[in-house]
Every structure is written in C-alpha cells, then in structure tokens.
Image 1: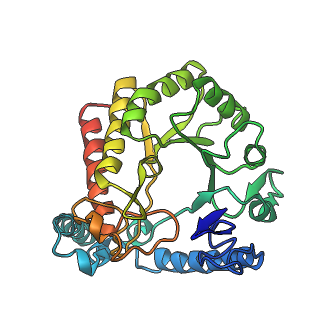
Image 2 (image 1 turned 135 degrees about the horizontal axis):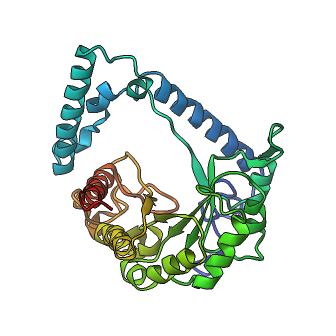
Length: 330
C-alpha cells in the first residue's frame, strides 16, 4: 500500500498491472494491460528486427549512431574517433573485395526480462515439439530477482521447468551454501550456459561477500556465468527522486573486475539500465547531472536509467578493463 496525505491506495506495480496516477481507479489491477504489454513487446521486436536486418546495423553506418546531444561531449568525441577508425577499416576491407559478410551488414540480438508475473509467463510458455522441452516465450533469457529466488518459491519452480538460459539476481544477503543449492536446483545437469548469477551488492559489500560465493561455487564444481548488476545495489533517494550515482555504479563494476582477478574467475557480463534519451535520472558522470537536475528530465516511473552519455562512458571503461585482462593473459 502507498499513503499520501493520509490517503492509502494499492501501490503502483508497473504499467503491466496498474497505473502510476494516485487515484483509486488507476491503482486497480487491469488484466487488459497484460495483453497490451504483449502487443507492444511484439511490435517493438518487429521494429528492432527490421532495423537489425535491414541495413541500419551495418558497421559502415557506425558514425550515424551518434546522438545529437552528445556531439560536444568528451565521450561523444571518443565515440566518433572510434567510429572513424571502424569506418576506415570497413572501407579497406571493401577495397580488398570483402564486402559480402553478413556480420558487417546486420546484427543478432536477444531480449530478456525479469520472470516476475507468473500469470503472464505461464500463458506464454510453449512445448518444443522436437525436443519435448518447455520454453518461456516472453523472452530469450529470463531471470528471477533477489526477492523471488527462494528455493520453495513458485518462481524458482517455474524457471526450473523451462529450457531457456536463465539468471538469478543475488545480493550480499545470499548465503554461499544456499547459492550452491539454488544452482543445483535450477541446473541439475550442470549444463554450461544454462545459468547466470547476477550479483547486485554495491562495491563495498561486493568486495567483502562476492569472493565467498565464487569459492563456494568453485568447490561445488558448478558452471555459471557471473554477471554484474551495478544499478540495483546503488539505489538511493535524493530530493524526493529515486536515483543512482554514476561513481557508485562505476565503483561496483571496478570491484567486480578486481574480485575476479583476485579469484582467478571470469567476469561474464554487465547488466545496466540505460536509455538513449537525454534524461537526468542518475547523478554524475561525464554528463555532469547534478542533484538539482533530477527534476528537469526525470521520465521513468520505475528505475532511474543511465543516459546515453553515461552509458557510453561506462562502455569505454569496461572495454578498458577487458583490454587489461587480455594484456595480462587472463
């Protein structure tokens, strides 16, 4: 429940369930929203498929992917420099007669989301007639959250039964032995690529707790992909807005790489919430969003997102860390 000025109403649970407006009518769960969400998702996927296979994703267009509001920024300039080098390389390849590779003209993409609303997920589950396996067809990759990962939880039972690659988000509250049991439940055959463990702890807790989780999984002989979610462990309130500080987000990614280097394990991915829009939802970074700027372009109803410049800055940082690992032979 949510209370404002003494009035209590059911909480806003996302556009797929009810509305954000603080009225009794808006907060009533509406099943038609589930259907609308499905159709909007399908329409969005069709649009992205058209772009990805219709030439927009061609590498010789890499300079066209720059956003207007970023052109004068340091990160925008770094991107354009990189794009120029890529374009020169493509021009050289074409001059050598290499111009028909599909990898240069289109891209493959996959979609994922949290497996949260089991009514929605169950309705979109189908049996593969060739293998007999069931798949959650709402996305390629589904994950369950920190609040729904309990062994006796319906979400874990559902995810155990689908053949998709799946993820589980864990915080510093996760006990190592419980993590081992959860992985064994979701991936009893220890199939490589089946399960990702997405850690979300904040930099300090990650340095303290994450090594014990890696060690426990190693000792159990389990194969997982470790992924860093530096957003959800760094959420705070500022001037009445839910936000994240860029330095804290970057700090958790830095800790993620440091711990893997310390443990001899492999950093498998980074999970970010971002948008190409010039929003002011996260504080700091090269875009210099200040606390007082939050109200100017805060568009999300849910989680604060990195804007394009902040996301690009993190991408360059992650690329730099990966380059360091290669140079060290890791």
